[in-house]
Length: 282
Image 1 (tube, helix red, strand yellow):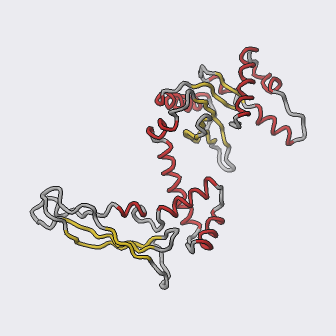
Image 2 (cartoon, one colour):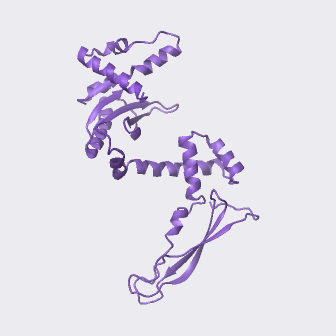
Image 3 (cartoon, rainbow, N blue to C red):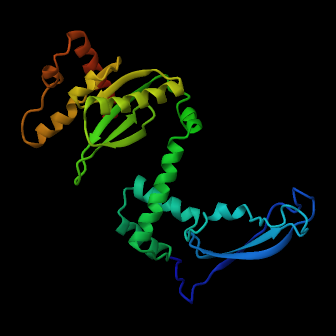
């Protein structure tokens, strides 16, 4: 549904022209055939965008029926959007970087920028921002650039139980770059299901050309999925739960005792736990 603008809204008019002046097919000069009017919210006030649409005037030209739009239009907003890019990026930053609620975002937009949107509209644009951000995070070129100075990757897999439903969201994180690589909801925590995530993460690491220095998990079953690297069990989570109940926190050796780990490997795991704590990774 299109946005209903109040009648007393004051718009800033902006005309967008097509950058090309000549037809690529026949070489004729392009002429204006129509105008497209759009009204957008921006952080600097309402904007009335007038896009001049052009086409080739030669009827015998194969490109005569094709209408060309200004490329500058998509730099302002995506098609059918009522919010400009600056507002969408503002929404995403407040929601995911500052952890604002939808109610806080709605109030700040209305008070500071005089942009009045419903909760549903804000959630819809946040969802679009989230999908674009996920696509950027998965882009191979972006990943390669982000890990240029990283010698080896350290991966962690965490199972997050939702408040409702039976699916567990497994999130694979990389600690050196402090990035979430991917997440997938699984109905079962069986070894076969979790192993598929580890294989996918290993494929990502091979694509980057980086060795996996260690894996981290808070599940004992994760040690049985065939991952040859050192796998750290996060005992701090257990310690935190016991501290909240008023009990004395376990030492690393006490927490790892049920897993029957060899002395050499136990030393390495404790070393890595202390290293990760010093780097504030866990």
